Amino acid sequence: MAYLEMPDHIPLYYEERGEGETILLVHGWSCNGGYWWQKNVESLSESYHVVTVDLRGHGQSGKTDHNHTLSQYAQDIRHLMESLNLTDVTLVGWSMGTAIALSYFDQFGSDRLRSFVFVDMSPYMFSEEGWEYPLFGEFTPEALDGVVEALQNDRPSFVKEQILEAFFIERPSEDVIDEMYAEMMKTPTGVTVAAFQAFCDNDFRDVVGKIDIPTLLMYAEGSAIFPGDVGAWMHEQIPDSELVVFENSSHCPFWEEPERFNHELATFVAGLKDRMIGAP
Image (cartoon, rainbow, N blue to C red; front, top):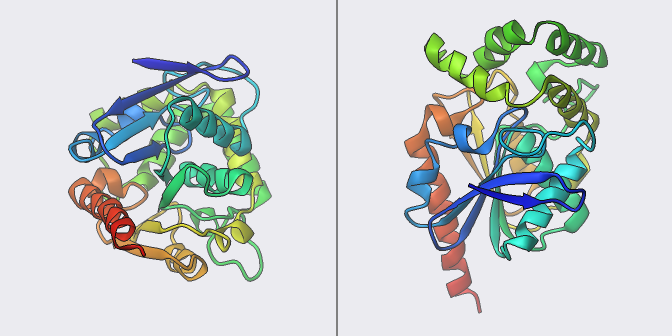
């Protein structure tokens, strides 16, 4: 167990395993690093230095009612990398973790990074004329208000029956759903609301096209969270990108197809090293 104190004195929980090139895994909304990446860390750490982190307010990190913005989460990731002296990092973001990675790039460019891996996320959440890839396929400010109300008034049924239902092609057993919900409850309801609002308040469409490092796009064909073909759109915007589609997953390909996910990610990182060796 390791904690790093942020400049505003919030303790950030992180774990490290393995040696080699660094893969930093950033979890999604209301989740945490240790539980949600459990099917990936052991395999990846056989060849790489794998770091997981619990965002402030999430998991085992310090709880605070303040500073739950994507820019602050990205600054925390930056402070973690600086404190651990991490360079040439492959920054992996799942869902909101991708939005945090985009906020990092918007603030700091590609400093300390070698590559990105984005897992099933759209750069803009709301429905808009000419935009085909909002959250849930259709999402409005009024729908956001409804999500906030559901989280505040009936979080158990909303998370178990709607969010977790949409996470998977095949719903896990009720014991696993209860376990996942218990992990998500480590994030206080006020934090989940603030983080979800921050997630929805950002528009990273212009940022995506500026990415100048290799990027692996890992999207799920059956995603109920982002049902449109946003992976193809991202692939068109990012010059140096690869798109991998998981046919048997919804929002969590790292959980539903972990062997393939781990293989694709490890192969991508190995290819980065080959590029460096072959560079003039």
